[in-house]
Length: 182
Image (cartoon, rainbow, N blue to C red; front, side, top):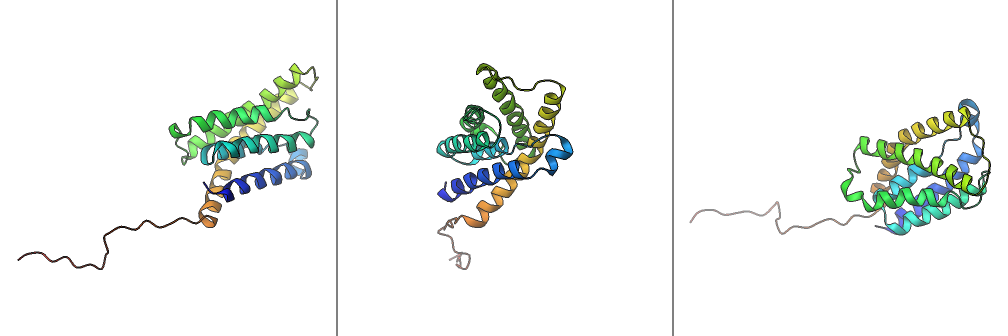
């Protein structure tokens, strides 16, 4: 894996957190702030190393918590758990398939807010719970499931366009003449 892929993933986390905090038309229209970090974590866990997953969990979680009303650092553990579980089982996952990406995005986008809520409750914080939370959780989960295959496609194209791939050479030359007979 090239360091460029790790840098692009971390840069995308920075841009995603900035857009979540600054762009408000979707939040005002749906009443929900869409979280892109679980989508990025799914891609990072499927296609990069454990160091990138850990850096994304720490840096992404700290950036997200610093711009939200969460306690600082509470999002790190849920993001890391999602990334670690997917990373250790990535050989068994059909990472290029739309359905697998959709399902992993659905699970990650559902798990991260619930685990964050559980951690906030264990720290004796009192978040707003009710039908509004249920609506926000459902919309965030579905949006994360829809956006995960898009994020994977965009990063695969960036990887294909920017990362050098050496060609494999064989001993067979197509212009070689093979003589048969006596």
